[in-house]
Structures are given as structure tokens and as C-alpha cells.
Image (cartoon, rainbow, N blue to C red):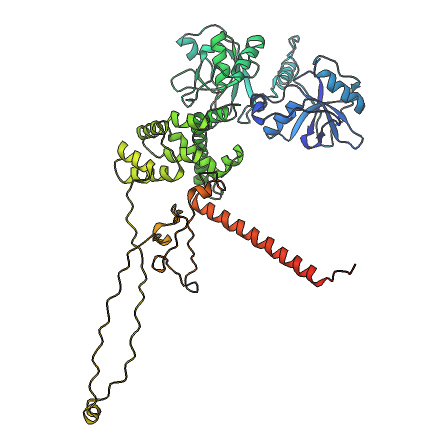
Length: 563
């Protein structure tokens, strides 16, 4: 941090200058700066001017303020200058092209609030004469210890306890073994030759050397060296593994540049979270890497939460998926689909990246064996269309039986598994019974000589052949029936299934797919979603008709004046 007197200002009291245009960037563009602030703190204080109401306006340090917000800081180190608002705006605009331009005005009197201590940047170590008495020695040692105390903070909230001597020559096995290592809750800082450091065992993510972001990083390191230190932890078999800063280490090994390194003792779950975060906040990341980073972080979060609850049952249960989804700015369902893609092949994930495969369909394919996944993608390239419906069927068939290529083709065509034929229900109208006079008793019939009425046989019900009979909607489930009667055909009474509307509130309407396509171009919509959309449209139509009826009634009551 610059050698200037500074104060801590609440971030909520820092406001933008009026009349300036601030370039807004994606939060992922601040990932390197956020990592630096988390590990080292803010090295250069912000420049502020104080308003008449006691609040502050930000003259310089807009990127640092945004990165500090993302790092969840509540206070920022700042230097306050006495200058007018117009003068501050002019300096802001000019300093964009000339960063070395001195700040106009003079340094304001830094008045900390009651109870606050005025802070100063760490002073450089000074050479002093050797004290003559033991008491003076003790006093001087204590003073030097306070001056040497670091102000930077490590990622776990631990102050840097020791700065080691730089080791810039290529190490051998003995040199690596002799490197001093921190104890628990300690952090060492050292400048190292890149061969001291290795890739973490948890970091199985790719580095795209052809991306523009990587090329810019390499150019910056080539000109200025590595400014932000990497974070490493000791390996069990000796040496150090990098948890945060893999791309910086890659560039440093290519250029043979020294690497500023923070060394901490970090457990496996925290190491997994740090490695995952280093990839999740990249500007560009493939679906293949993104899904695996999410899964690794969520599993580590669940293990950490489980251990805390085991020692303290009063701790509330942590919904890791909801917490991670909120952090990533997406819904929980989308997060779970992406995490399921961690079981998908790289080819399936690449189809999501290029837009040829929907995320929901890809997550269905991820349930299949990797070899089957490759076969499905190959069939897609041959012209077979994939949908949520047939990929869900693939999942069900693969779970119940062996999925051969012949069956896969049949499933994607919609001909497997074979559907049981639907037996049509043909209502048969019973013939009316003829009216017969009551048969008298035997005694009366003998007395009156009335012959017995012969029994009239009831003819069998006529068999009516089925014609254009539609399957019952209850037998085929919620899917839409994709057949309709040819135009001009009038169904006979025997082919129509009538429902008792007092006892059965189901009305079957058959719509053909071609007629629906222009209203529902999204082929991934489920039948239930299409049904809800139709009901919404009908409700809007009903409301419009109701309003028109009301208007008609209003105008009907009014008399038209005579001309």
C-alpha cells in the first residue's frame, strides 16, 4: 500500500462522481483483482473527496471498489483530498489517459471517528543503532516487531506471519524438501522459482492457451511479471501444489519467471473449493469444465456443512445446491442439470457449447453409459432428432434392458418400445323392449281361456365396424394425440365417444402437430406446458369478450342524440 496516511471508510458511504461515464464490466472480469484483494488486501488506497453532507465521492479506484464489493468487504482504505467537485471530475477524466497525473489540491486532515484509530501503511524497516542496555534492547525489539507486523490477510483470514528469503534458482529434491513450511493458522510469503510449484491433484481443468484472455495475461506477465501471488499448500510427499493461480503458474513456467507465493496449510475440502472457484470465475469456461467444477465445489460444501452439524447439531442444515445456484446467478434446476453433465462425455458437453444440443436433453443423455452417449451423438449426426421425450425413453429402456443400436434407432424414431393397441369403446344402443300385457295367473288364464304370451327373443347387439375411432385420452396419458380426422369426413354416431359432463369433466380435443408448430415453435415444451398455454389464451379471450359485452351494454343504455 502506498506510504500515505489513510482512513477506513464504509463502502456504503462512497458514491460515484456526477456526470461521468463508468464502463460496466462482467463480474467475472474482476476475478483476478478479487483474488488479490482476498489474499493481500487492497494495496493502493482509494482517492476520495468529502461532500458537504459528510459522505464521500470516489475520485479514483472504481475497479478496486467493485472488486472489494465482490470480496464482501465492508470498509475500504482511502485517502481524502480537499478539492471541488468540478476539479475532481476533471481529474478523473484526465487520469484515465495519464495515470501518473498528481492529484490536485492538498491532502485533507484525516479525522477518524470516535473510537477509531487512524491507520498508516506499514513502514519500511529501518536500521538503528544497537541499544546499550538490555531494557533498551527489549523495547527496541518490541517496536521493530510491531513495525514488521504485516497488514495483509490470507484467504482463510490469517495474517502473513513470515516472509521467507527469495528462492529463484532451479531447485533439486533436497532444496524443495528444505523449504520452511507454515504451521496451522500461519501463512508464509516467498518469491519462488516456478519449479517449486506443481499443479494441484484436484485441478483437472483445461487451460485454453488460444483464448484472448490467456494471451492478454501472458503479455501482461511478460511485461510486468506476476503481480498477484498464487496460493499453494504443502504436498504430503514434499513440494507445493497450487490451489489458486494455475494459469499464472503456466505462464511463469513458459517464461521462467519467479512466482510470488502464499503458502498455507489447507484441508482437502477447502482446497477443492479454492480450485473450483478459480475456474468458475473465469471469463470463458467450457460446459465440460464448468459442470465438473460445480460438482466438486458442491460436494466439498456438503462435507464441510456435515462435519459442522456433527459437532454442533444446532447449526441449521445447509442446502448446498440452493446456495451455489444463488452464488452462480442461476436456478437450482439449471444448476442440477449442469452438475449432471459432469457425468457426460466431452463430446456431449461440446454440443451444448455450440448450441446444437439443449441443456435439458444433454442432461438426459448424461444418465447413459459413456459408450451409449457417443452412439447417441453419432446417430444425431446421421439425422436422428433428439428431444426430451425420446431421450427420457432412452433412459427408461437403458435402465430396464440392454440398449442395442437397433433399439436406439427405434426409440429415436418413436417405434420402440411398442405400444399396446388401444381397444376402442363402441357404445351399443340396446333395442327397446316390446310392450307386453301382464300375463294373467294360471288360474285366471284357464278360466278366461286366454292363451299364454310367448317370450320374444332379444336380438343380439349389432356389430358396428370401427371407423376413424380416436383413442381414449385416459389410455394414452398426457401426451398429445397427433392424429385427426381427414377434412370433410363426418364421423358416425358409433365413432364418437360421448362423455357425461355432469360426471366426467374431460373433453378430448385432437390437434395435429403441423397446426401447433406455428404457435409453439419451442419443440422442447411438454404437453402440459402446451395445455397451460392454451388455457391462458382461452382465459384472455374470455376476458376480452366480457369487456366487449360490458361496453355494448353501456352504449346500449345511452340514447343517440338526434341530428
